[in-house]
Length: 539
Image (cartoon, one colour):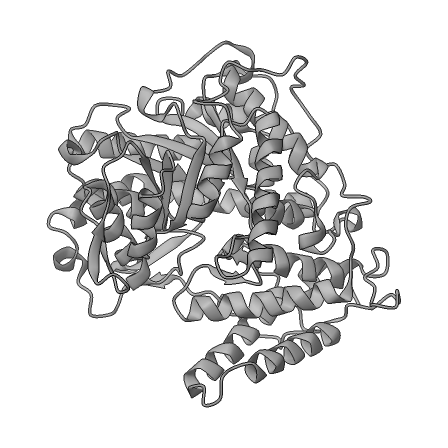
């Protein structure tokens, strides 16, 4: 068997075709009967068209450069720090607005779930990120519902019906800062402009900006930029925000944003990225799970980077910890907030043992982030808010800097001596990706699985880990319960997929609808083929 994952998409495993097969994850397509000019909000189509004409080709160029950089990494030319520039060598700072000084905890969750949005906004968290990306299934109705909820939440109008109490529940007045996370720059939207794909990032941001009434907002319009891979991409976002402000007659810099550091190449360019976006940026966030996926993806050819079972990797593993220390140093140098990542283990109100373990893990994780001089964290459950906030000094740690900062820390320390690589871990990964993809097919972008919140980022991690083990099993062994080295061939992986699918189907209640069974089978098919075809972009 080849040790190159890209060989897995060749004729040994997939029948040869005269042209490349269609991607297994389709582009989000508006319905055929949808008439963009008349069915979108009044006047929005021309606004969207203008933005697309000025920024669409640039977005496509940036996406192509990502593919070029990944291919270069797989040839051994890995990401590295950039030469010294004004951004890294000269003094510059932003003035952090008063309304976002305290972001000790930012609750995050899917924008298409109105009940969850209201509960997050009523949780007491100083920040809430309403997601249109990783935790939302990328389908037309989900995105439209999510955007509608975002606009209603920004206006304070969003409600949900509480069936237990038989009453409508709305948003309580608060100083909570609301951010919207659009889909990433690599994602496209179809069905709005004849014969053309448009940037999903552009559509999401423009759709929110077009519908909000600034007089009803308690703070500037705020976005959370995901999945960036270079400092140059910050210039695209800056141009988008500036074009929207000009078109809407808003003051320059009225839009504000935070940005996630969740790709390996961006980690080497965070200072340049922040400089390019300094008119709009208020902070950076270490999106740890997407970052782990990207780290695997860029090091997929390196047997030293075969990671252990995901849930045996400690939160302070060096490849996280070095970046976790680096981000606050860069941010505080320039007056920006530094926000930590999500703790995946969720509390449970039904399982006292799991609840205690989840909150203990949360406390330890956030104490570590605070000690690294982070200013706050991400959480996804209201029961996590109080603990998370208590671990960070109020309102922030902007005045604190390391005593002996290192400008160029090692961001690629190999994960040696960490965790275990087991056949049980591979099996758990297979089972999780089937269950996650089943949820997506059912319209859910995130699913609580065995106490862990699994979304697109963790699904990608598991698929990449399986590919790693197929590539490098001979030199980075994976063992069974008896300690025997197990060859991770395509045949074994297919067998595990078949066995885990059978187990999942056996666990369904008697009389489960045929469409549910069919969705599980389709989820298995898609997940396995994505691994064999090396489709690992965050889609």
